[in-house]
Image (cartoon, rainbow, N blue to C red; front, side, top):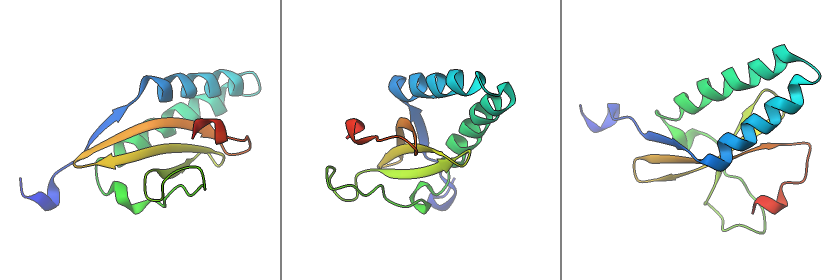
Length: 105
């Protein structure tokens, strides 16, 4: 396989998995369909990071070094927060955009 077609390895952290479960559980109290949609979209978006993970914008915050984390919007209000190191993508968090996520940094 030539380098242009080489896929990145995507690693989902335990913290990101727990955050996804927590958001889904909360969402299911209002709409089970929406909760299932969030989980499904997470899987699709995480898989999409195997190709071109650099396509998404940087997460900019004065508390983190510039160029450390990228963000990917899911289900209109959740962010997948990840970093790329060599040929591996590390998904570190899933946050609700409506909440203050400064604690994450």
